[in-house]
Image 1 (cartoon, rainbow, N blue to C red):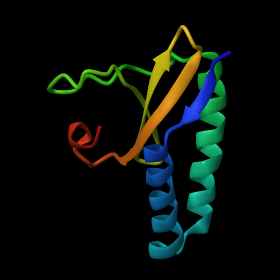
Image 2 (image 1 turned 90 degrees about the vertical axis):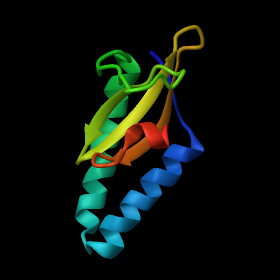
Image 3 (image 1 turned 30 degrees about the vertical axis):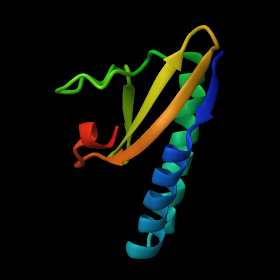
Length: 102
């Protein structure tokens, strides 16, 4: 089993997304569902880190990210096999230019 590590950039992204749903959309239930789905997906990811596809950017980013979607938001992570760590880097709105933010 891999240990999952959330990077500060991901935590900032998640907090911004949750605040958007809670404050702007007045939908705290949607924010709760995002957290629930994220927890469930990451629990499975810790067992099967390669279950999601690689993200193939237009231009090489120098890092091999994998990604999955939660409620229209793309979650990007990397795998460190030797240390058995999954690092979750970003959570970006699915309409964003991912290459610009990774």
